[in-house]
Length: 393
Length: 147
Image 1 (cartoon, rainbow over the protein chains, first blue to last red):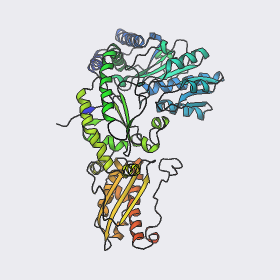
Image 2: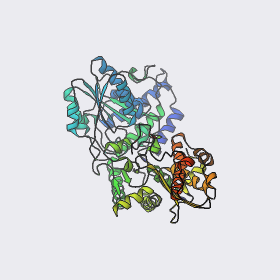
Image 3: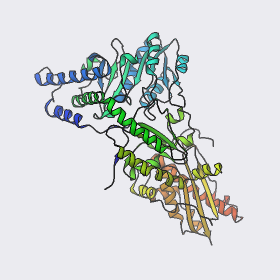
Image 4: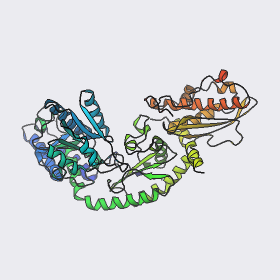
């Protein structure tokens, strides 16, 4: 039988049994519209309130600070565009972000630049972490919004959000963080982080696709992105995706309850994977080994190209990812790998393996069994590898 | 996104490797853009008797190289010149739009090897082959990598 290993949990995760059970129950029985006045509607409204309370509790927020969205991208778009609209009215035109944000953030700030905003894209160091000095140096009188991811989606590196948060709070600057990758994997407390807004996606933690939320700190006003009905305290229109929301709440509750034990298990697998993969000559780990999400391993192999590597892994039943050009439809290598200072020719050969608690040591064994052979096979047919080895001689 | 033929030529590439007795060798592409193709031709009496390739690149780069070698193998030089990027693409049942440049690279790799062959036998290749785009021509959508 062909073996199968799903090792792309940073891309998405399978819906867990607990989430599926909850969603099935809601889809079957709790089909009322939460805005309806009758009991069937009220039942759905109660369900939503429970979900909101669970999620708020998991991040140290209150129910009134949680707003359900269609996912992480909508939450990012809303936070950034909504804050920018309010900023502009106050005469503030400057936004600070980083060079290696997710495109849901970068494409928003690029659009705002076209509309007259100034955006500073902070560099990151070779470990994939923003330096506080660079951040403080970028602050201006008219800085109105800072948006920096909690953990990077390609290399998993964790950013110093609480330090940045303290500075922002002192100066009265709004801070948004994209916590899509971090949620459920490392502890998140909005008060400790001093964030004003925080984006989360459900499908990265075993909930369904198409659901997420934005935390907006009480008292923080941002413009609406979605206009229409009075849902979500009149701030996000559209009938709530009740089944997915209830599922996401169950997923968040489950992730937080088991975080410590899963963290140890995942970390042990990941560390072994890194130790063994780095035995392949001319390979490297991208991003800090310690300041990163437990399940993330991102490698570069000189002389080969990422998409070829992924296709060969897929042929042998392993799902992984690459920051390579080819996967995104653009021909540029990963903006994240370029941001940490890798040259183009090396950045083309990247591989992201993202493990989670559903993976096993046997999964790691299998990856380690096939990966070196695939790398060798691709290098054997690579004229670039010939050059690298030739110049070494 | 890839056709079954592309996947087949990627997973089981034809004519991979080097030719020790090649009399025409050409290389196109560059590492910055993420693809390099090197073609080896063994030409006797105006016929491509044997061909090999080595490629650094994505799945489409490998598949187009492989298909290009299949299309020129055993052909006369005149016929080999008719192997265009479109012929390579058609033989692979098409390519995604972002990958069309791979087929261009494959055509250019064959031409670069032929250029080397003509030069080796003392024939000016330019009137036969025209210009070869052996390097980056802005495929990444920017002004090009200038390599």
